[in-house]
Image (cartoon, rainbow, N blue to C red):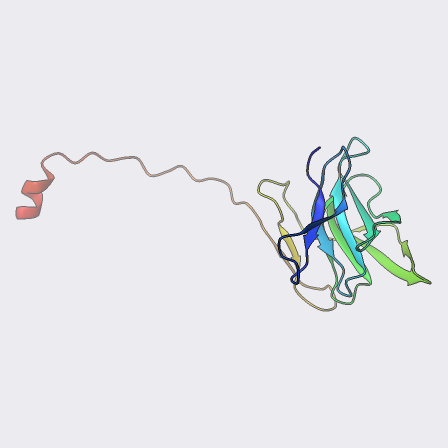
Length: 158
């Protein structure tokens, strides 16, 4: 047993309800704006992929990524799902029809996204999905050398 997707209701804060729990890892859950769907990453196919399921029953599943993905994030109106995948930031249109989802083919957006180092690194920041907060890593600069100052008390007295 590894990482699972679970939730805690405010009216029963000591009771953890599992949404998705398999022998594989599931992580980075993102609840849709209307609270009916949850997108998450899983490694059940042998590579990281993004899946969407109905919430909280998880009785249906739809693949969102086609060739790898993680860190899902919803547009504010729920009509697009973003995730980090091959080539960078991907966007898939999402259509709901009669209680089921139709998730379109992902399109790579021209926004550079770094490989994962410390968990979630993507947030959609506008209603229309035209602005994002993305964690970027700058090249490490050489640290300033350590300087040993001998006789520092005498220097302070001067």
